Image (cartoon, rainbow, N blue to C red; front, top):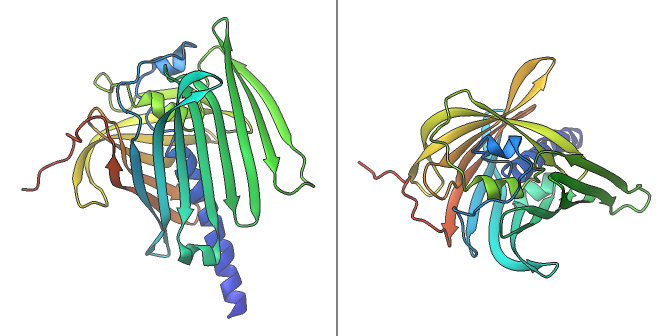
Length: 293
């Protein structure tokens, strides 16, 4: 029994680690709804989608050997604040594993992001507690002469691990995992055609990665509050050996809020899903909710 349980721990930990990385970081890459984000260095934008006080809750599940298991919750909160003396927005995303999941693998990830009132990325931090691994990834953003700059640093709780630092610049706007969600929610997808691809650079705290989203169309999706929503569908993909591999499918409310309603994640050892559970303080009514027949 001991040997079998150890094997279960290893497989479950691997799934949990990927689930944490995908859901908590890419819940978050959601919705680059206009190509202008990828082609212009102009980062300022007008917030048309959310307001201070918005609180969103998600239920997280993964599938292993035909069994679906709830592994925790995620909370996304937005408030007005001040950053370095200037009015700003602060976004927090907290991922908490269930007590049952803690037996196999403990997950406590917190992402924090500050943007200007014009939704320009200013600061990003991801504090991750995944099993015995404790890391803090940070990114500081600045702008000069139409160029975006980012300084990044990873620190470890283990003092024997060396701190990693890097700098990067781009003529395009560089986003982090939360600021991209905040800005992209204000854009519209009326002019998109099925199959359109969107490219953008994203800072993870250790490096800057080129990301790709593909618009797939629209679909009705049931959330964990027993309500079905009309959604826009986007695929987050990676390219390996010239082949396109689906990583996450996003289902986002087709209304002025552009709230993530469901995410389907494709992992090496199974699949995972994040379901919208509830929202408080949303700026607009959820007009994408479909009435029961």
